[in-house]
Image 1 (cartoon, helix red, strand yellow):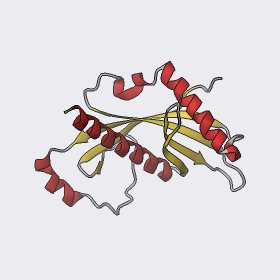
Image 2: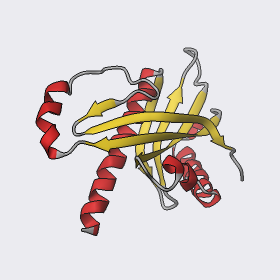
Image 3: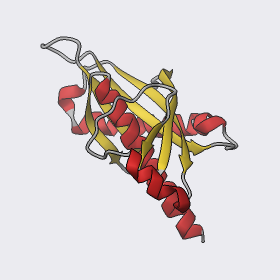
Length: 166
């Protein structure tokens, strides 16, 4: 049963990351990486914003927390501990070392909090008639979005959620 729970958790987390990446793209960001791993940890989403044609204006390392309702950690916010922040910073430094052309771009750490509701199997057939997988329907902050058997809501997006440190 634990493996099944972990598997569901992993799938839901991947849906949350894809959901946030799609939202960022709709906001004009380019997604450089999803699920980028190193020995220190994982960067859920790495996104680049370009305001002009000449140079990028911001590189965001986005930590995505996807939780169901009634969770214990304020929708994932309490999971961003100082230890987690240190791991993200080390992982981001390794990402920049592997991508030296981005080393001079201003960076920040963002946090995206996504809530998820899973539909029971009995509702899946009706749900499938509502979903167009080819659709690039816009994702709006705090508005539910249905994907497969899940209803996802990006309810909080924190820019520069914590400071960079050495």
